[in-house]
Length: 386
Image (tube, rainbow, N blue to C red):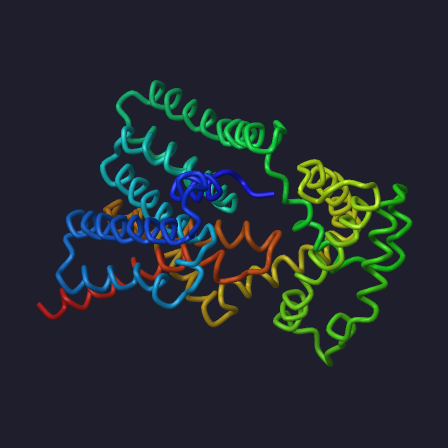
């Protein structure tokens, strides 16, 4: 059920099981993290002509996830995903700043590795596409650049599936892609479902799963609690509270019990194929049945992930400002602003579609945006002081 990146990193750092400890994995991840932050801040120092105070500020900001968030250095994929994100962002900006196709190649390779560690980083392909357009626009040989970079982008996208499938063939003896989207996508669909939707399903397993979830939700106080006014933040609170209940204790337990009654084991890779083939069609049917409700929930989660109106409005202003600044100046700071804003929005937009908007999914792009805003404000303050 997991993509190849982090399990493979564990195997390598524990010498394929010879070391019975997670310590080497976490230690190496921390070393890579500190090195990547140091290199990235040095790069920003040169490219943006940062003062010593700005260098210290940027370093502290990028170190904060390791200090205040357990997820950034725990024994989960975040411990290596965060350093890889810093490296990927470094290469992305290097390519954009210097209009370098060579750096773009290394950025695309780095993004493939990052996506194989955490699939949520598929949102990088939005930025990758925009980078290719920018480099082609800036190139003297536009046709050659378009063919070269476009082909590379397509190959990289296809290689993710091929590498993941090959990994599962070697480790799990199944040439299959990691399948975990269905059990996530079905949660918001079931959250918005109505008891009468049982008629939408002909398959007995799907019908049984739906009826089982609806029966359980009828007994849940949070699900049935009614507010005098339907504020979006209350909807998100209910959704977040019920998310793990629906996904793990209801959907996966129900399907797991069916699988076990067949005399099969949950460690069998075919089990996750079964989960995916059951949940994904159900989610699509329910979303089609209630598109407006699904859209409202998605927007509520998206708004909440952006910090509600308190932080959403400033972000919109920053996003618009970054576009205007890029068009007006096209300097390196405006590029950093625009890239960070796009990364922030695309990450939140993807996560909100299938998951709770938890800090562990969003902190990567939060701190990238905080860093560029802080650098810009400090530079402005310093220039006025001079």
